Structure formats: C-alpha cells, structure tokens
Length: 173
Image (tube, rainbow, N blue to C red; front, side, top):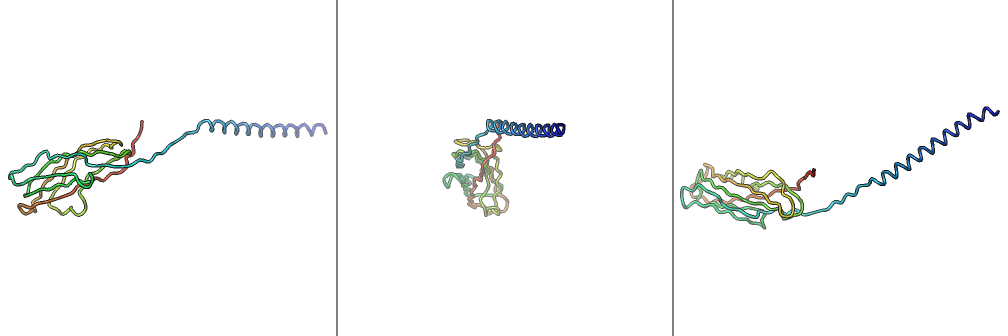
C-alpha cells in the first residue's frame, strides 16, 4: 500500500506546483501591465480658415476700360472677383493668402461656388499642398482668371471662390 501512495503524492505535488506557477505568472503579468499604462488625452479644437490677404498682380488689359477687382467677403470665407468691360482672351492674376485662425491643422481647397460652371470664365487655381498648422498657419496661392471666347464685349462679370477645408492628419515623427 505504501507504494500506491507514492505516485498519488507525486501527482498531487506536480498539480499543486503547476497551479502555483500559473498563479505567479498571472500575478507577475498583471503587475507588469499595470506598470506599462499609456495615458492619451484627446482635445477638441476649432477650425477657422479665412482669406487674409489678396492683391491683383497683373492683367493683360489692352483696353484701359477693362478692370479686375477682388475683395474678401463673407467674413473671410469667400473671395469675390469682379471684371468690368470684359472681352474674350482677357486674363488677370490674383495672389491670395489664407490663414488658419483655428487651433486644428487643416488642408484646404479653393474652388468656384456652385452654379458658376457655365460662366465664360476659366479659373486656374494654384495653391499650397501642405497643411496649415493651427493658431496662425498661412499659405499663399494664385488664381489666374481667363475670359473665354463665348462672351459679349463689354460684359461685367462677377464670380466667387470659396474655401473648402478639412482637418489635416499630421504624422509626428
């Protein structure tokens, strides 16, 4: 009988050792992961992108009666371009500056407002591909306005460009 108790004691010892080992591993893992916690704070910000400056650089006025005027309207959200006494082939170049007064970095796109696609004006927009950082980030661009062939002489035209923008995804390295 003494020989039957020996294997039973050995199995009990191995079973108890396994339970204690697994318990120690669990406690150690719990302590280790408790030390390696990450704290992430997410903050909300605001987006406020506006036209902050503009100027007419050049126009190819063959007639002194043809003029281009540009002005910032709608609290800086739009740029209005007016051309008086337009004629086919007329071009003018307007430089503009965009400022991000918000706190969130953004990317922007400048485009004509809806419903102006059939106007006899071609707009070539050159803009920064970089994001605008928050709190005063700036970018510069250029608009080249060209009057198409299907226009009556001495027409007066008005068009708006608007800023479309969205939050930028910025990778920190």
